[in-house]
Length: 323
Ligand code: HSE
Image (cartoon, rainbow, N blue to C red):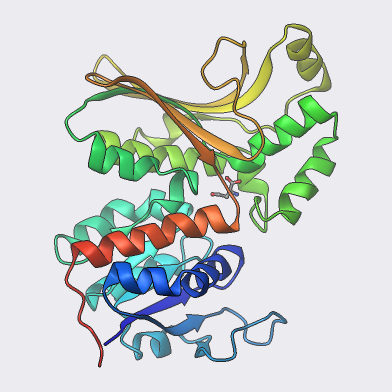
């Protein structure tokens, strides 16, 4: 008896999932109650040079992945499409899905969750703060609390660049290149440095916490690419740090959200958050202020969130086991 899983996209995150399925094989088998069989990997371009596991079926045709009858699909593709169409088809066929695709999920997450209903599991922890388990904390551990305010660092690349400039004196370009080399930044880093990536993540959080999103055009969205040398110097002289902050709160029954660089004094709760870390500071009416901090990008932290979702889904939904 096996549980069949497929991976869509074999870039940084898809390869991370593959790696964890290999290195944690025995542990996962014990936890899941059956061995996991990787039944297929979907790539966009079969002729691209990369290391592919020779023992696994690899294709560029999604229909061939579905023909393997996976129980669970890991989606690690970038952009709204084809990710959205692929997951819609998978849910139609009662396949559980786990995604790291924030652009797609900010746009279509609600649709997918409605489509899945009670019968299909959807894991999307990896969309929001990579290895920092904020969605699971809200969903499973803060159900009774009303969350009135969230302030967060949600883009690992931006935080890495800002930290490198401020504490190591590196140039913006140099820090960005390092973030790309280390697998933090997107292949095209525009969304990272212009603030859109943090914006999408904030919209996913908003949908989860408040069951709605503010109208996107009302949300101020600024990235870190317009910060001047003078602004960095001024912050440093004041003993402050510039950080890229996504925030949302309920004001007079309305959602107010923004995504922008801010100067944080040492007394601010997000001041100590350096490097590639993300942190989410929220206020619950019962629990009070709470901050969760951890890796906000990178291969294994992001894949960790996906594999943890995978296990949670296996433990929560009946999965047919293939003999
Ligand atoms: N490029 C993203 C970031 C990856 O830097 O936060 C994690 O979503």
